[in-house]
Length: 246
Ligand SMILES: Nc1ncnc2c1ncn2[C@@H]1O[C@H](COP(=O)(O)OP(=O)(O)OP(=O)(O)O)[C@@H](O)[C@H]1O
Ligand SMILES: [Mg+2]
Image (cartoon, rainbow, N blue to C red; front, side, top):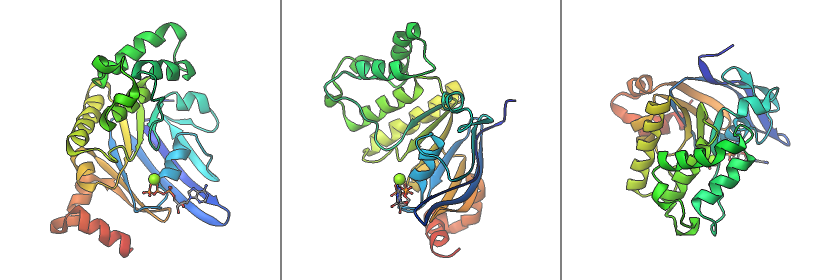
């Protein structure tokens, strides 16, 4: 059955030894939403993202993509997910296009005869068609990040998960990335789940927020709800208050 919730995280926990990294987290993201995922360093964001992208398994709980359990039907669920977790790793001495062709070969959802066409398509979508033949080592960080998004788009995902995508980008690079994300939502209805420490930046593009601290859910809701709660204080001060009080 198709679910309106593209991503559903139910009661998910993870520990390392006797340390709890993620503690019974639950939240849902609807189709076409852009959700910001925030929390201080070490809060457990990357740990949760690695579970959502199938890199590690939860100790407890369930994660579904469009209603499909990622641990019971891993390939089917993950075929609808595109991601950049940590920085995308590309071979610097290969061209952007060849890097994508390599990744396309590993992609379970992409038939051999469609690879070339899809690689050209995703290069065009992220605005790299002119530079596709150049070696990745000649790319700026912003271009590498766009190549990362191109990689995430290969399998025509319903949701794209980005772990701190704006890291190290200059203001123009950040704006380009934001416009690309908004465009992808507009053109293809892609849902986004984006971790970042840049609250102002997230506020410009997100409809929803999930806030964690020490593995625990602190707050979740729409941007408007958060803005209302923060009032004249603004999101940043309100965030700091949430992190130090509740
Ligand atoms: N495999 C592991 N074994 C032990 N501890 C781990 C492991 N992976 C992560 N941790 C710890 O879990 C906590 C959460 O880490 P995580 O990387 O998920 O945080 P984060 O919210 O992504 O932080 P940041 O904003 O700095 O990226 C950290 O204290 C980290 O040291
Ligand atoms: Mg992290």
